[in-house]
Image (cartoon, rainbow, N blue to C red; front, side):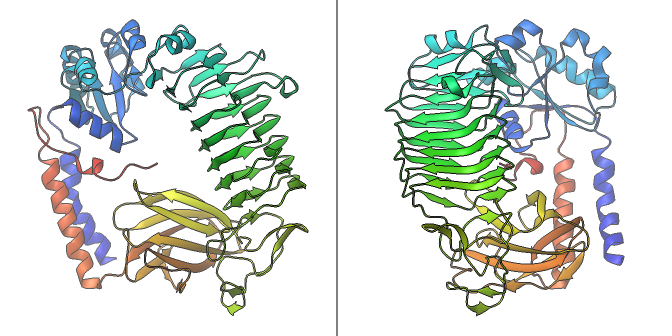
Length: 524
């Protein structure tokens, strides 16, 4: 109790200083770009007119023309951090003053406007009358940035380029049930940031994205595929990456035909007739880290062997797997493990390569049998999650709870866990040593709990694996390095005083600084 009170008193000057800014802050384009990259909650306000906005704007910018700003202040929150820009900086300066005069607390004016932004080589998103015209007029290897909006088109990409939507929830290409939405007819193409919908019937081969025969180096990531025949269809091609997409309510989610070295990674594949269909001598493909939930068939293999499938979550599919004349590898050996199967009924009382040593490890003690030639030797006892906490570091968990709000603040890992009240929960978490090393303390809802540091081969020279249990309800978990208790208060004091000094630097004059909240690695 005394520690909490002392911390509150120490931080109270910071709270006063934050809530009483005297003016807005001018920032350079470089500083603005850093703010955008490292603060996902930043509000970007464009005060130009509609035609200027449509001709090119910063990603996810909110448009309120300067002439309408005072009447529309209610659309903004006074506590938000707001970056304001216009064409050259004149209207944004006046708009920033209107905001601070009306009680907005954290206002930043981008000097030089979008003109300087473009000169610095940063992307702008354009509202095209036809995306196909932009593709036809683009040079090889060019990137086309497409503004949010609904485009009723069916595109053909016949040159190497990158097609990037502003936001996959709001940048929509609709095939109007008349044919494939994006047809790829060449090598070296990347498609990301779109909703691709309404291609029409799978019986006619219509798809959200169709990669035609004999192409390679195609990347389809961070898209929403919904209400298509095939979400993504690949024929006779190689070196394809399908990653981070949401694929829902299609006849077939992903179909791979006679193709090799395709990577299907971290997709959410839900409520399709078939989630993933690997067909006709497709081999050396990797299916890793996907959520396959409530499909009629999770994965269907037909005459396709020598593929790797692991760290996927098979949850409540009518039939988890269907196999015809195929033999594949269904785990990544021990201790990495295989897949989570919602209908697996085995126990976890043993550990080790042969699951014959005492102690739980998050892996089932018996195989998950698919058919006589296919089995997952190391089925997971909970769902697999892979959190990219820095540009190079991942934290992996196996947990029979739902994990949300996962964060790493540079010192501690925290997340929420939810499960059926009264049941037992467990979590196996694998933490890179470059993030946190040595001994740890684990707290569940503020109470310190014991954990097992799993030995080699679970913990290695690069990672430590922790295993702990708890009682289910909605819980908060915090994992911190173990410091001597006398060092904790000085550490918090130093951190707080630095924060106060940084807040004191707010002023209208041009400043050469980075804001502390933007120094953290961005969430992925």
